[in-house]
Length: 114
Length: 115
Image (cartoon, rainbow over all chains, first blue to last red; front, top):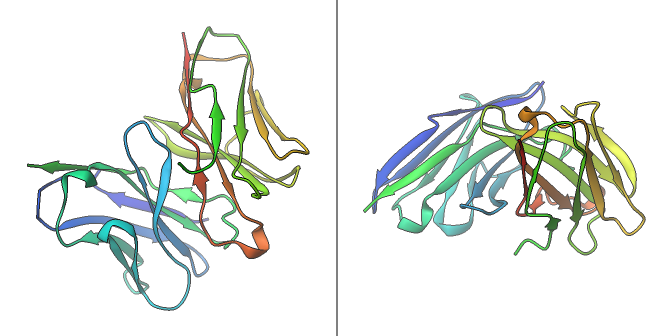
């Protein structure tokens, strides 16, 4: 069975500070990993994904994540937080590139302090 | 705008009732997924349809059923509703599985409140 664990249900950072949202995964086979963002009253939107190849992946809005197999982690970072980054972020894992039964973490709510 | 349309956006009903949630996927997407988002259980995968056929099943209760029609729109039917069924129900779609990009496109959800 596959799963993801997001450490910290709420994270607050000051505007301009580094954003770090943590995600650890468990998978019996090489995983496909995703970060999705949910803005208030909206559906989820893909930020970035790791499938194969380069372990550092870049996404939209200046976010990036690094796949570390040895640490079973896929943490999301952004060098400088912006007020518009306030949202809920979900890490997800799939064992199939066809996205069958994408398994989501419990989410991390990011608050940006002016 | 993801291109996935869900109706209704909000629905309030009573325990024991039955409701139908509707989803129109992005043009050309063959796969439709249903997810339930609640405060206590997070985002839970319910069921997936691919080109009219059930493809995968998750934590979907027997009181719930879904189908995908020839025009690829999908409906999620929830019956004998209980208070605990109150949640946000998301529909998502994706391209043909064999050419998958690994991305799901989500609708804005249908918020169900059971009183």
